[in-house]
Image (cartoon, rainbow over all chains, first blue to last red; front, side, top):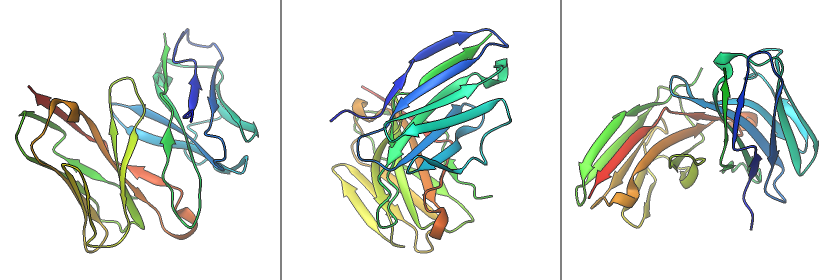
Length: 115
Length: 113
C-alpha cells in the first residue's frame, strides 16, 4: 500500500512568493494533520482535519498560512507571502481515528527554504 | 500547555552497547507513542503504550509507560548501526483532544560500527 504522499519534496523560493504544499493521505484514513519541524521547536502541529473538516487550526502561525482539504484524498498547505522564518520541513500525516487510537502515519516531508 | 522533555538530546555509542532514553512530562497523557525518524524521512511509528506501567517489547527495543502515565522510557539492547536515528516520543491528549500529539524534541542516536 502507498503511504502518505507529499509534493514537492524540496522547495526553494524567494521571500514574498506563494508556496503550495500538497498531500495525499493513506486511502481510508479519516484524519489528516499538517506539521512543521525545525531544530529549535521540534515538531509542531499546524492544523488537523477530520472527515475533510478543519477541527483545530490553533497551530497555524498567522494569516499567511492556510490549509484546505477539498476531498478525502487531497490536502494543501499554502503560505502567502512566504518569509525566511517559514523555512522548515513540513510534514503531512494521516490516521484512522477509531476507538480513541491515534496512530499517525507521516509522509516524507517537504523541505522548504525561503531566501 | 503540555510539554515533553526528552533526554539525552544526543547519544553516540558503539555497536553492541545498551542504552536507555527518557521522555518526561508533568502532564498525564492518554497514551504515548514512540517514533523513529531517519534523515530526509518522516517519523515512523514504533509503538503505542496506553496503560500505566505497561511494558512492550519490539525485538531489541523495550518500551515502558510510567505508572502515572506522565513518562516513558525506551531501552535498546545490543544496539546496531541500523538503530541510528532520531527517536521521538509523543503524548496524546485525553477525551476529545486525543487526536492531538505533543512531541518531544527527540534523542538523536548514533550507533558506530
